[in-house]
Length: 344
Image (cartoon, rainbow, N blue to C red; front, side, top):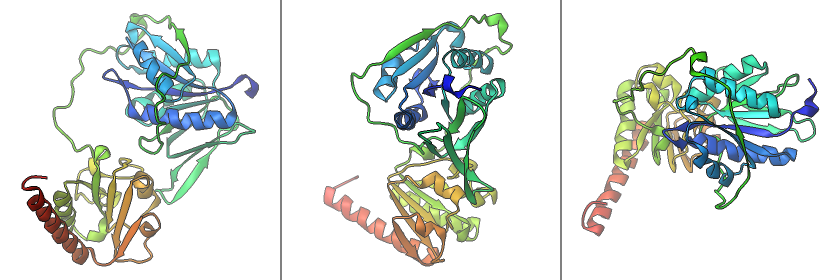
């Protein structure tokens, strides 16, 4: 391949219920940094129906160019139709890097694109960088069960591609009024050419905890000893009005459902306050919570890796420390209620 033909950083802009997915805005921030380092333009690729109105947002969050496929055939996401559109655009304009959110849609589309081009794809990336001179994308992610960080390169093919987890990159502060170049594309695809048909969309009726939206997370690990011991986490979270989180070991032990899991194979979170109680601090867990505003760790092992990742650390028995915290927080809440004469 002649790498000279490939230039620019692209971000696939995922749209859900008429709005841009937050992870796509985060990737525009990461893409801007990579593009500036390479001295190239940053582009967002929008595929859907009636989505031209979203172009202004893409520019405000850092893009120089917007490639837009706005056709009725793209009303609903289907692998085949979106793949054909993005392949057409990629083969025509030849970007050197394409980034996708590591969502169900992003993972599905990225893997289909990588297979067809063909090129390499790094999945569930948590860190991104680029070599200025060579243009090599340095996509890093935990490997070997989260015990090490591996940096993966795609030396022989272009474009280089990666899916990136939500909450690990930071979106830029939007620049109101910023504009860019709009390139409208048409994909000559007919409905009868697509094997998958969307008959009905049924939204889930059960309400699950959205741990990635919580301001306060109290997370527990296997250091709590048992499911009964883990109830201490629920008690502290309840007092603080927070959400319960857990390490992978706790979920695998069946103490709590998977959607509470924080880490590489769970959810990436960025709360204002994160309690890590009885959690040793494996890389797999750290990558899921390292961008929290304030990290407070409680562990009986003074050499636990979690103390290298926290802002405040308490070495001690959680069953002695946490009840004291609960008592203090309860008293503080009572004082606050008395002071304000009612509910906080």
